[in-house]
Length: 200
Image 1 (cartoon, one colour):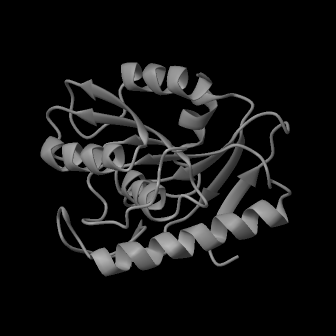
Image 2: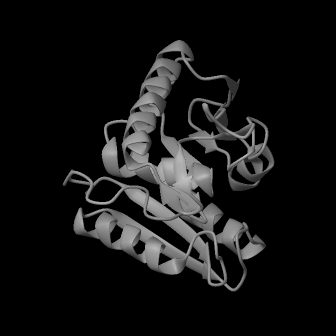
Image 3: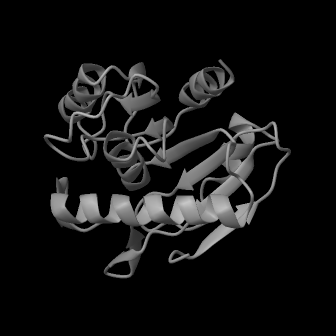
């Protein structure tokens, strides 16, 4: 497996949460969030492989809010390969897998949902943007996505998130949209809404 990561086992009937940190984060960043979402879930937490001035990220960007889309696609495939390897190594085949991401991690999670539905069919994404324009027209009829965004988030503007929602729905994904009045953050009500979505 190519990515540095942390794995914490859970009972076989609990989901596996793929934890995708934001820019400058690491493998421990979303563990507390994951325990709130599902205390018994197994946790698979890789570290972003791209360094931006020493801050770990999932893919390159050309400027704030301007993604290197070729790199997004390549890194989504890299992450998908890591997940498939980890499922074999840790005996997770057949287990429910849910990507949980914040900010840059939400964007790579969204890219996985759009580009690699063979790997990720469920995702809870906080402060996400449209990860890739014009993705392939995969049938996402078996895909569920929860999206929480702040109405005052300059780093993940709502118009970009709305485009992402539209692309998912055009491909028949089931999308649950949550909005809060804050900025680039995970609010308590967002966490409660995501927990209810995960349990549904």
